[in-house]
Image 1 (cartoon, rainbow, N blue to C red):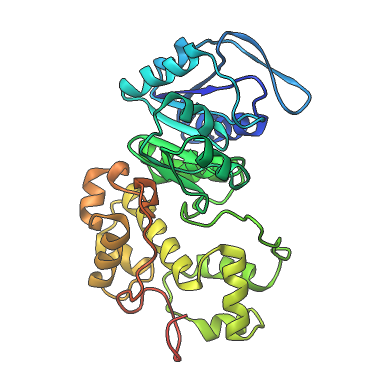
Image 2 (image 1 turned 90 degrees about the vertical axis):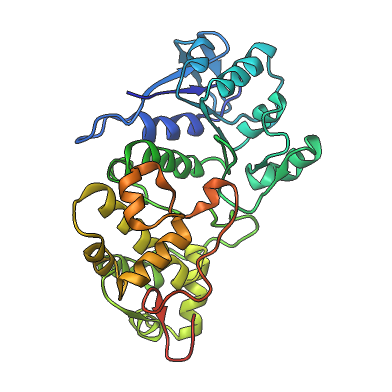
Length: 345
């Protein structure tokens, strides 16, 4: 079994630790734990947190350098004084091929190692300007949830820890186990890493009724063609109001969201079934095999057949994880997304 170590430094953010453990280490009913997880500190023993209670960790830095995956939990203050042994352990782990994840302000710890120099990275939007000012060699992108650059993942923190850990589980263990981990944690199975961070955005209305209910309906009917005006009618809204409300809640347009869900479902079926590729395309709402292949390759980076042969590591649904942004196609092959008689949404 693959191993993961979560690094908890003094003044650690407890949710960063527990969110990573829940996705990576929880004993799933059918699949077992995706990773064998340990929590370590610079030394075994008591680690204070920012929440009025402490953590007891039973491992030191030796657990970090030997892991397949190292997760650096965030701290507050954001840029803590870090001992040289911690920084060197992270450098050694990276040289040995360990995948490294920094959650939220954990990016500041990685920044001190020099591992982020010349790379693109993100952190919590509140601390992004400070990260860019203190470490000018890092290309800080405060507008996305997750960034990957050569086996180093950085995330916006808190709930985005779930997003990056689910993506790592999907790559290492497959879409079916990632879905089970998401269901077990009672979270959404796939959220676009390119979705913007909610800085200075109003809190959306409660997710009951309106666009939220329509999204649930869309997920249950991915095989059906969808018309934007009909969806707006289902939500009891005008076309413009529905599009605006949908984007405010989901972070992307109805067409982009639907395409991502169809491709995510296609990946799950390619990973977990022997169903023919053409049949999977139809089940996921692609009108023709060409439409399926074109959109799948454009977003995932390989054809459906090559993805199935290569296994879960063939590529993510949204390749922002490979260090570059790619939006959903501006003009997808017909019958892929939401259609409207008056043009694309």
